[in-house]
Image 1 (cartoon, one colour):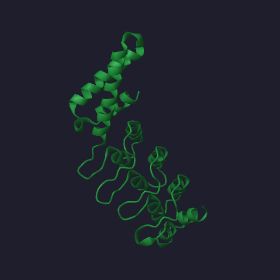
Image 2 (cartoon, rainbow, N blue to C red):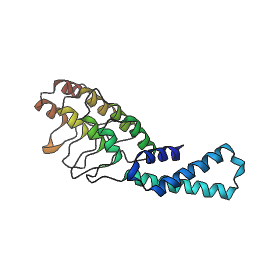
Image 3 (cartoon, helix red, strand yellow):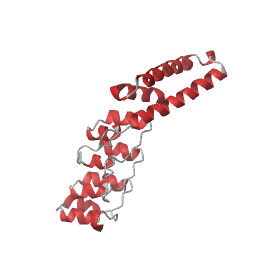
Image 4 (cartoon, rainbow, N blue to C red):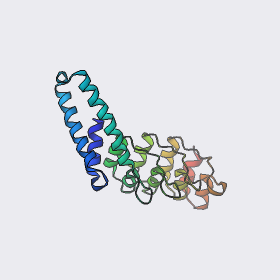
Length: 196
C-alpha cells in the first residue's frame, strides 16, 4: 500500500519526476498486486527479488519527492502553504521529512502552518501528529509558538503547547512567547500562555 501511495504521489507530481522511475513504480505495483491476489504463484526467490525492488523503488521515490525547489522548499512546504491536507497526508505517508528546513532562514513546514491562522489548523495538526518538532526554531531562533503568540493565534498556540512546545523557549533577542504576545497586544494568545 505504501508503494502505491508513493507511486500515486509521484505520478501526480508530474514533470519533476523521472519517467523511468514512474514506469518502474507502475510495474512494481502491478507485480505486487498480482502477488497479493495470487501469493502462491511466485517462487520464494522471486518474492524476495520483488520485495527488494519494492524497497529500492520506495527509497528512490522518497528521494525524488523530497527534492527541494530553487528556494529550498520541499513538496511538504508547498502542501502546507496551499493547505492541501490530502497531498500532505500522501507525502507524509511516503515518509517525507516533516521537519525539512528551507532557505537561509531554515523555515520548517510547521512555521508555515502558523500563517494559515486559527481557523485552518488541519496541516498543523497533521504535522504534529507525524512527529514534527513543536519547538524547532528557524535560523533566527523563532519557533512556531513565538509566531503564533505574535500573531495572536490562541488556538494555534494551544495546539503547539499540547504537542510539547515550551512557552519558556527564548527566541530572537532572548524573548519568550509571552513577551512577544504582550508587545504585540495579543491578549488571547497571552491568556493561553498564562494558563498553561
